[in-house]
Length: 388
Image: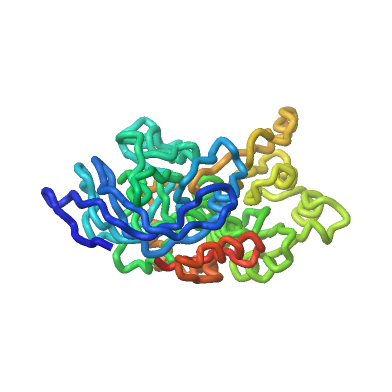
C-alpha cells in the first residue's frame, strides 16, 4: 500500500490502495480485494480501521433482506475503531493520529435537530440505510482497481483497511482507551446501554424485561443493572443465552419454548402485573407484541431497538394504548454521538459494572470475515472482533 501522504496545509492526502471485503450481491461470499480509496473532501476524514465487528444489521444487509437497500458492489460494516489518517478541508476537531470511533448516526451540531434536547437525530447526518454515496458530491470514495464505484453503507463502511467518512460521523476518544473494546461503543453497547439510561431513564428498583439477548439485549441488561433495576428478565429462544445473560446482570431467564403460556403472561405473573420497562431487541413483530403486553398497564413503556423489515406494521390496535402502555423507538441509545460518546467511553473505562470484554466472544483476522458472519448466523457469537 502507498502510505505517502501529500499534505496541503497539513490536511489533504493522495488516493491510496488497500484491502477491503466487498459485497457483490445478496448473500454472496465477500471478495477480499484491493480497492482504491480517494482522499477526504471538505469536512470528511479518512480513517485507518484497526478493529471492526459484525452486527445483525450488517448480516441482514448482506443477506439483502430489504430489497430497497440492495446496492452493489458495496462495503458493509459500521461498528469500528481506528486512527485518523488524514482530514479534509474544514475539519477542526480531529487531526492525523487521533483515536476515533465510527458512528452511523452523525451529529453536525448546528441544525435544529442537533440543537434540540429532545432528539439525537441530525437533519443531515442521521442514520440512512438507503444512502450509498457521500453527501458532498453524491459520489463514492471507493472504487475498484479499474475505476468502477463501490458504494458506502450507513455513513461508515468499515469492512475496509481505510474508509472515508463525514467528520460528523467520527468521534475522537481518549487515546488511553483500549480501541479493541471501544469498538463496541460504535453500535451495540451505546444502543442498548443508552436505551436504558437515556431513552427509558430506568430508575433504581424498576423492573425490566429484555426480549432478544444478542449484543444489544445484553447491553440493555448491563445498563439496567448499573441503574439498580430490581428484576431484569431476559427472554430468548436460545437456551445458551442464559449463562451470558446472568454474567451481564440478568436476574431471571425465560425461554418461550419451555412455557405453557405466553411470555408476556409469565412476566406479568412474575412481576405482579407487568414490568415497568420492556426492550424489544429481536427485530420480530410477534416478539414486539409480547414485549408490549409484558409491561404494566397504566405506566409500562416498551422501547423498540430491533431492526424490522418492511412492509409489516405495528402489531397493535390503537385502543390498546388507552390502557396506559406506551411504545417508543431508540436510535443509537439516544446518544448525541459527537457531544456525548467520548464521555461514555471514559465512563466505560472506569465503571466496574460495564463488562466490555464479555461481549467479544470471538476474534479473527479480517480475511476470515465470512467465518465471522457464519458464527453470527449460527447464534454462536455475540460479537466477533475482526483485526485489520
